[in-house]
Length: 562
Image 1 (cartoon, rainbow, N blue to C red):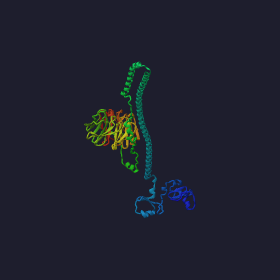
Image 2 (image 1 turned 90 degrees about the vertical axis):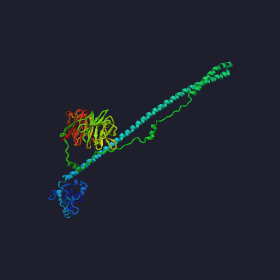
Image 3 (image 1 turned 120 degrees about the horizontal axis):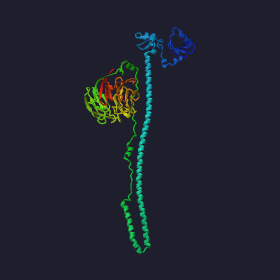
Image 4 (image 1 turned 60 degrees about the vertical axis):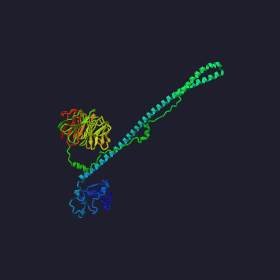
């Protein structure tokens, strides 16, 4: 590489300073206009690639520092050794690669390198990394905005709680002060009335004393004798009043005490915190997939079922031995489970593969049902209870009750967690590990909503809006499907191994299958196949069987093929 890009290398060799205008990588030097003209018509250099000097200088430093000739022998590269993955000059071949068999001409090795698969793969890798970084940045920024929003919400919630407490305490304080004032005012009134009576008697006694003094001083003995009897009667009356003061307790002093409610007194001693801030970490659905992993996946042929090729073959009509069926599933041994959802008398019915009734379990309310393993099923309880039950189908009893603080309708098993429709609490996830509940979608869901999952997608129905929606595990809506001409009041929902979505149309009395990207859809069952007020269905991934149940009456088991 020339040490000075600004001057023409040929002119500089002739001790003439002229500015270079182009750069020839093969000659490894800059050229002025005159030399470039000769360079472009010379037989030895007419095929050389040249670039404007300004463009060449803008190449990354690491590229500019790459030697284009052998540093050891100061010779041009002529050979590329595939074994050692390095370019070689003629002397390198003689000295170090004489026994290497996998060598090619350097011109053949570099031919069309910019359009090669290797170059294209690097472009894809860098593009994927850039896209991943942008998604990570966007996700982080959204997370920051979410945290700021949550902070504002929580501050408002804390202030509202404090205001509610203050308002309640103020009301209690006002009530107590009013009671104090009323009690003291009443006592004051009684004392004032008593003192008024005392003052009246005091006045009368003083008049008696004055009269007695005047009689003593100025009346005759006869007058005094005659008046004495009346004076004794008046004095006796006043003595009775004085005695009544003692007997009535009018001289008693009333004492009042103010006793603050013990709960309030304990508040300052026992309540150590106003609340707590709980941190919960949710896994991100952003994943970086390396190009080599993508290529490995592409090498595995996957033939997805087209909804146009799906064929349903009726295997049997099934007596559900139930009414008001809201949930159904299949056990690993082929038995079928149906729920009977009634305010009084909900139960589960297990039916053998031959259609005969196996047993019945009465265990609280039963809305939807999901198979967890060979021995355990999970059951939601609809609006009548805020519990989800785990039932042992071998022991035929409830082995665990989990409280979720909301109604719970349709549900699905994702990994080791339950996804359930919580009506006013939205779409939620229940973790079996610690019984914790975290929201996926906080917006309200209508009653009778159902949910299923496919890979990292969660798909649920909303009967009130006639909508089927697909969301990520973080609640980001991927797509929505709504076409009232074919699907009304979507209820039960399930998915096959290819991601095709099967949905019950309650009011349209049919089963509709929707492609994974929601671009295609097709009615596959209707009233012609015996559907009457259908409510729920289940696709068994192991056997490719579809179980469809009417709200009252029969269910139907189909084999699904393509």
